Image (cartoon, rainbow, N blue to C red; front, side, top):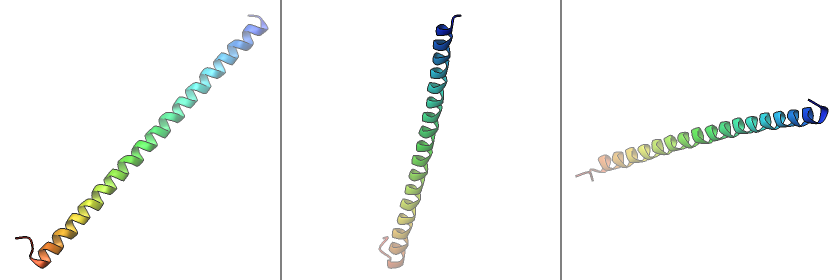
Length: 66
């Protein structure tokens, strides 16, 4: 291979590696976003359950559950 072919081959290799790294970073960011979303949903469900529990407790305390 002459010098210019070698240079473009190396440039192509570097570009491929950079794209692969970029894809890995995107996957990691996507996974992080997904797990954050899931924990937010869990937190929301816990808050909802606690609120429902509080409503039930008030109903029981005031006997309006009949």
